[in-house]
Image 1 (cartoon, rainbow, N blue to C red):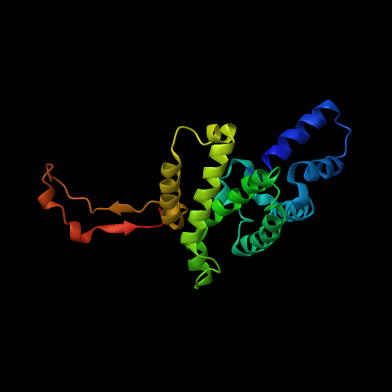
Image 2 (image 1 turned 180 degrees about the horizontal axis):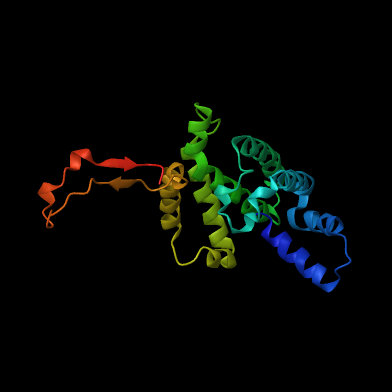
Amino acid sequence: SSFYTLKCWAGWKLMQDPQQNLNKLVDVFMPAYYGNAAKEMRNYYEFLEDSIAKVPASYNNMAGMKTSQRPYLTLNFFTKAKSFFDKIEMLSALDKTHSLNVIQEKVIVDIALYIMWEKFVLESNKNLPWDKDSLLQDIERKLGLLIDKRPEFSKLLGSASLQERIVDLQQKSEAFIYMDNPVPKLTVPYIEKVNANLEKVPWEKAAVDRKS
C-alpha cells in the first residue's frame, strides 16, 4: 500500500485528536521520514492523491481492488511517477537514514508497472520507455535490501523466499492481460443417447463462447 507508514502514523495521531489538520500532519511526517527527498516526495504524494480523486465515483471503493487493477494506474501515471522518483532517488542516494523509506515507496510503483507491462505495450502499440528486465532486477535488488534491513517488511511478504516472489511477479506480468477477460466456455451440440461415448460427440461443431 502506498504511503502505508504515513497512513498508520497519521491515523494514530488523528485518533489522539480528531480535530488535527491532515495536511499539517503530512507536513510534519515528510521531512522526518524522507529527509532530503521530503519536498519531492510530497509532490509525488499530492500527484497520487489527485490521480485517485479523479477516478469516477462509479468505481466505488477501490480499497478492495488489487493495486494493478485500479483505474488511475495508466501509462501516463507511471511515466510521471517515474519522473518524480528519478529526482527523489537522487536526493536520497547519500542519505542512509531515510533512503530505505524511499525505496519502500518506490518498489510499490515498480512492481505495479512490471505487472501491468504487457497491457501498456498492447495499448500503446509500441515499446515502453524503460527496459523490463532491468526493472525486474531493480525490484529484486530493492526487495532484497528491505528484507535484509527490515525484518518487519519480510513478515509482510509471508513465508515465500525472495526468488519465489520474483517468479510470482514474472507469472503475474505474463498473465495480466488475460486477467480481466472471462473464461471461454465450450458449447457442444446436444445429442441424444450418446451413452457416455465421447466418439459420438461432434467436437468439430463445438463453439467457443467468449462472451460468457
